[in-house]
Image (cartoon, rainbow, N blue to C red):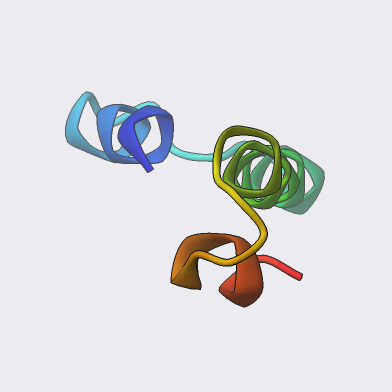
Length: 46
């Protein structure tokens, strides 16, 4: 979310829908990578 928030705060909006989707996918991937499967963060990202 930090990357997405920074983009919006600095008025560097997403030029394409694909850029937005790429950041969303990265967020979900990171949630699964850096959290244990028994956490709510992991479960919500699956």
